[in-house]
Amino acid sequence: MMENNYNQIFAQRTKTLAINIINSLSDLPYSDKVSVIRKQIFRSVSSVAANYRAMCRARSDKEKYAKICIVVEEADETVFWLK
Image 1: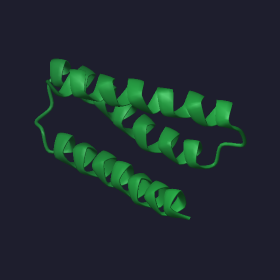
Image 2: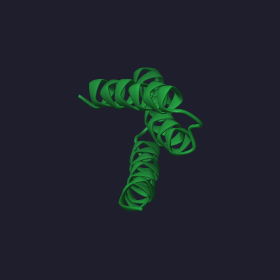
Image 3: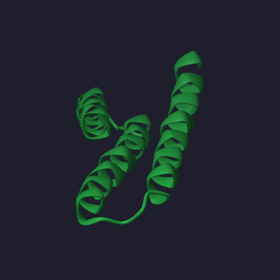
């Protein structure tokens, strides 16, 4: 039961993070350079939220592990682009 509650909380946190980052980047003025980086960040941060949600619905431990690995990779990519 505790794991399910944690998963719900973390799923909401990843979704909120994605929304906050997307909203913040949407306020930046347009330029070709910013546009390319903004798209990469949009893709990676939304993938974190989507794949964490998918991990919560995994049908097996192997599937769960594969999804959480994607979450870690996409989160790392998001950090890379934000720096």
